[in-house]
Picture 1 (cartoon, rainbow over the protein chains, first blue to last red):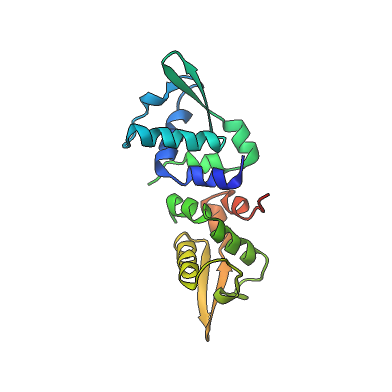
Picture 2 (cartoon, each protein chain N blue to C red):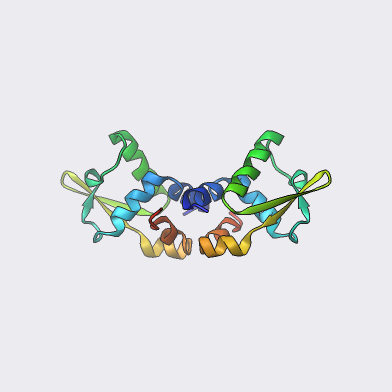
Length: 91
Length: 91
């Protein structure tokens, strides 16, 4: 996990929306198609790719669904405090 | 200080170079023109404007020089852990 990838990943508001949505759900319970995001499908896929590359999200396919897990512990060890900030609700 | 401004500010590698250079110096000792950066003067000014807007850097003019101070404590209180990550040397 690189610091640059991590900071780039959390600097985008749509990606932080994805992270907050994942934070409120059990691991492997939320499929990519179920996020309420104001972007096209292609842009959504791009955001998930950035989150995976940064080490924030892990994915696995289950039939037609692509399920997600937030990599809380791994990311916290690598970048202390950053996930907590990324999950913070903005005014 | 907004979270979005803070994350945007530290997500840029040139701005992190500025922050690390300031971190190694006493407050108000380093002028804008003295940073060794691979960018034009206009781009440099833009980076300092972003750092000021994010609450990371404070500036004051002293004759022909614009001196800088890293706002460590204020930023740490607002965004715990983020400045420490921004100052981390990358591999």
